Structures are given as structure tokens and as C-alpha cells.
Length: 128
Image (cartoon, rainbow, N blue to C red; front, side):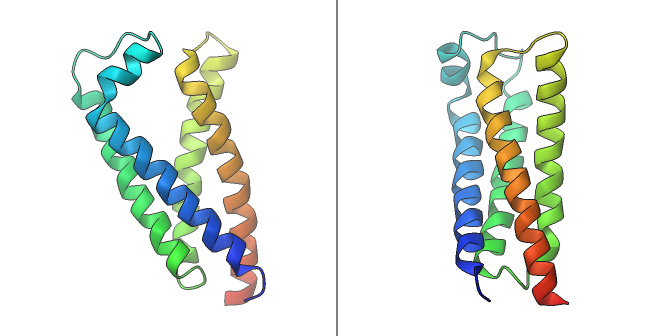
């Protein structure tokens, strides 16, 4: 498929991004909260479970990167992850406030969401 290279690269980057964040929140959550001067939750499991989910989604992005046309049905699930995170962070950001720690990732996820949508539309045309 023409232009499939950018889609593969996008999902390889998404894999690395989410897997890296997942590992960071599983292993180094205390350091991350301290670095951003944010009070951590009362139990590490509240951060480690979402970290594990990020790794799982990262593995899904890896599957899409390897076989974009065949795996394009997975992209909406990745988009929903990005929508969920962005909706929560932006809602708090623009209403009652949220620590700055969460903002860069929301902006990055918004970019991923838009690019995932474009990739999905292109891959659906090929699959049809």
C-alpha cells in the first residue's frame, strides 16, 4: 500500500511511547511523582495497573505496526484509549485544574488520536 510506511512508523512510535510510559509507571512511579512534585496515591497499585494497561495497548500498537491492513480493526480501541485519557485530563485541566505532570501526555495523546484516525481511514479504504 502506498503511504503505509508512515502508518507503520506511527504505530511503532506509539508502541514505544505507551510501553515506555507503562514500564516507567510500574517501576519508577515514586520517582515520577517526586519529579513533578505530585502527591502519589496511597497505594502503588493505583498507578501500576494503568501502567500495565499501557504496555498491553503498546503491544496492540506493535501488532498494527507489523500488519497495518490486517490489524486495522484494532485501531479504534487504541483511539478510545486516547479519547479516554484526553477527555479526563482536558476536562480537569480546563475546569478545576490538574497537575502539570499529566498535561504533556494529554497533548501527545491528542496528536496520536488524530493520526490514528487518519491512518484508520486510509487503511479502511485499502481493506474495502
